[in-house]
Length: 400
Image 1 (cartoon, one colour):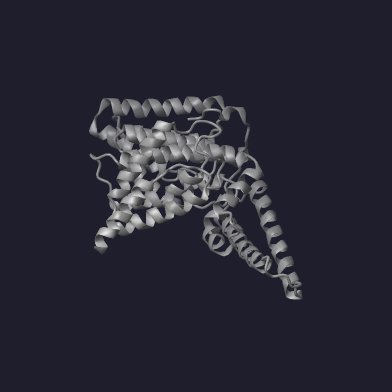
Image 2 (cartoon, one colour):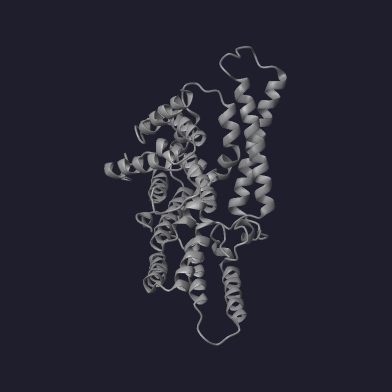
């Protein structure tokens, strides 16, 4: 899972409390709205001098952004100890997986809590014989450890190999109960990983909460908003958060491969089709993280186009709407290979088959959005002109 991450050192911070997160996001939203208001006031056609109220609004905007910076410093270096339960973030899953790895200052407390949780699980069974459920608990523990172990640690590959061994041997045995353990454990672990990546990407939560307002409010000067956001992310350089995001994306790709090998890829399909926040943030991620998302999406689109697999129409539609923009705006392997020319051609064919299986109104939405992204991006891939022409022809037949 970790390819070249061992060359970079990075640290982990404790997760701030829900109250601190709420205060921070509320301040960020206020600052973003003020910024949009000031941008509209400062448009090129507004050549008159600022009024006193404009100067006051500008000072208020600067003070709000300063407050955002102060809160960010407090959250990074003075984390609160009253954290919200991660179970609430998983929609009821009982797996105790923290959103962010614990810092060294709270390692003793985390170890104590983990020991108590493990003891509770063992005592809850109340029988002496071996249980297949123990393998599920073992996988859950390993996934929790993977979230805490830095990729620079020599024990990281050890933990990955352990998870590989358990999953592969369960699949090789072929027993229904063992396959169910793989499916449930991998699917449950897959669920929180997108939110962790959003937390790791610098200002990821900010983009998720403000992307709609900025997209509709900022004046379009000939360069798309998505391009400007990408340029901003590149200009900021690669931070420790980007490295953590790449590690988590590598793990998400590994889980997707395992779910596919276990015949449970529909779990990944469903969750990937609802990862709207991650799809938005992916447009601002580093090229390496974007490349991993492209690989995951390409693998899932290949599964959707499989004639032997029944996929709900809404899942197909959401996959196309959410992840087609990434295909258009991502680097697509200019710096290093992500997909080969053959793989790109096969993915275009798969997407064409998926689009053709949608109702006419859904095809219109998908292809209209694709045309806008494709014409505004520098990439010539994916070219869905065949799908677009077929949809136009089918619309003409309805008229006649």
